[in-house]
Length: 366
Image 1 (cartoon, rainbow, N blue to C red):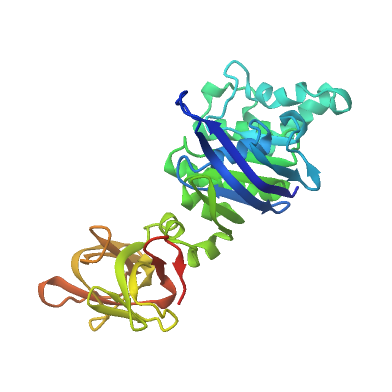
Image 2: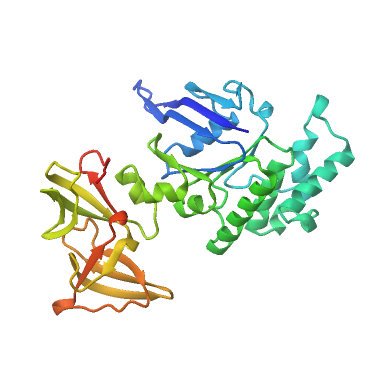
C-alpha cells in the first residue's frame, strides 16, 4: 500500500494557559512511501516522528494536510477502518492473557463481513505466530517470555489481521544490544515475507540505516532529507544530517575558504575551485576519510591508537576541531608513524569531506 503524506501539519496547544501560542510537532510534511517498502522515520527525541506515525494510523488527527493510502483519502477515517497494524514501544500486551489469546484479540473484535469462524481465527493466529517464530509459545503468558519474545508477540498481533500498513514505534528500544540486532534482522525478514508497507520509527540511526529501504531524517518537525540510507550518508544535505548519521560520528572543524582552497587552521586541505566566495565555513570529515601520510596536508597531535580487529581508530587533537578529539578509522594493517611531539599527519578523501555554511548549516557543494 502506497502512503502519501501531503503537507501534513500537527499543532498542539501550549501548556501555558495564558498564552495562545501553539507547539508545532510536525510542519508541512510532504513525503511518499512506496508500496511494499520499509521506511525509517529517523530523528532525535521530540522531532515529530512518533506524532507522524500516530497520524498515519489515525490515533491523532492532523491540524492540516492530507493522508492517502493508495488513491484513498484516509485523513478523517477512523483507525479501525484504516487497515493498519501498530506495534508500540512497550509492547502493550495483556498480562492476564496467553500468547494465543493476545494474538487472537484483534480477530475476535472483527464484525460484519470481516468476522471469522473460531477455526479461521486459530489458523490465522498460528500462522502469525509461526511467522515470527513463537509458534511453540502459544500457551505462555507475557511474564513468562523474554523481552524479544514479547516483542514478537506484539508484531504477530499486529500482523494477524493482514494489515495494509504496519507501523512500528521504536520497537527495539527496550531490548539489550544483542537482542536488538537479532530482532531488527527478524523485522526485515518478516517485512520481506509479507511485503507489507512498513513505517519504522527510531532515534537510532544504525537501526534505521541497517533495515530501511528509505529513511526520512527529521528535526523539529521538519523533514531534513529523504532517500536510500547509504545515499543520505554519502550525500548529506546539511550539517544536521551529516552529524546525525554515522558511527563514530562525523568530525567537524572550523574551516576557511580562501582563493578556491579549503583551509583547516593553517593546513591547506583541498582545492575547491567551485566555491568562489572567501568565508569561514564548517567542515565535516567522516572518520573513514583520513589517509595516514607523514607528508599529509592535515596535522594533529596524536592522543591514542585503538586497534579494533580489522580496523584501527586513531584519536588525535586539532585546534580547529569543534570537539576535543578527532577520530580517524583506518585499516589495522597500516602502520602509524609519528614525528616530533607525537605529531600525526593525514591526507583526506575528497568524497568524505563536506563543507557547510556556518549560519544556515546548508551544504556548500564543491
